[in-house]
Image 1 (cartoon, rainbow, N blue to C red):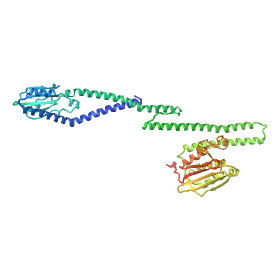
Image 2: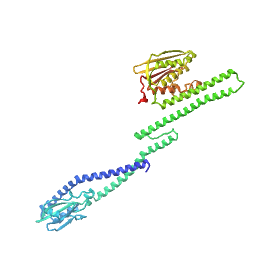
Image 3: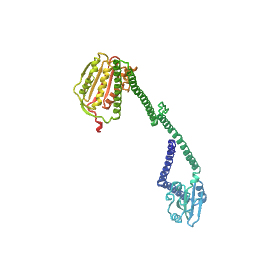
Image 4: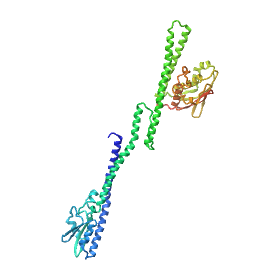
Length: 466
């Protein structure tokens, strides 16, 4: 069977049969090496008691007494020194006793036929109704020597019991198979549900609910599956938002460029307006260029995590270079800039970290107020470098802080600041900082400014050499 239910049921039944066979073999070994000799000794003692009783009372009715012994569950064979023989109780199936064994008992020996019966399974050993599978003892009656051979009449003693045991065995086997089939279905049912849920998930439907409330490994698996489903649903939602945002952010400047290009075709437009239209087109082209660069940078960060170009560099000098690059924008917005950047060397990827300082500084400029302030501070600790960018800008609400690292997320829901950014900057910052085994902390409040603190280890492992 290909189904798990069929395989589990067949495997369990096979284990039951195999266990029964092994138990049978072990029981047989125990019987052959222990119980058989004990049984022989017990029958021998009983036979000696019979012979002693007959020898003590020579007037006993010999035949009546042995008939009585036969009627209570024993098979007896009596033979005297003249060869005259007599059977009592249920007849033997095979009268295969050798003359040598009879002569030995007449000579005074005890015959241990049960103990020395050939090593077969105990079903044919203990239950073998054969004359040689008996115990023989000598006795004297009315001055004649006799040999008494005796064994239990198993059929008579266990006639009702063996039927009872047969029914018990048959019933237990049938019930065991029935319970195995039921329990197998109970165990496999949640796995079938999980399989169906997996197919549903593969079709893109993430609204899955599994009513599997179990406190075992299958319950844990179902819980993990539901958790995975929720995460996939979130990833799918982010993917759709990502596609929507990329489409919007690409389509918007393209539409603007197309519109202004059509305006430039108007021959009656003034020179000043043409120059203004060209300026807008350049601005939109720069916006597209920035978006493509940032998307490529994000892709590079995610796909080449093990290919960082780690080297030692002066982080203070790097931040000063970023400040110099954007000095004109700071002056244009009439912002007050202060910084404390002591000489500090660290290992990392200078190109990627340059993007971190650039994004944090441009954000501090972009979302600041006129005549506001920006304070940059570099601090050395025992095992890390801390860089803080603090501005006096518009700040962020609590719900905005929770999403600032989401791609294409902009704190302004009206998207009025769409021309000023792509919404990818802080996502890039977070990815680069995590890549350097660091962390970024943000503190902000509405209209009270924002502080970003980047904490990086002095020495970042060069994973490209591992």
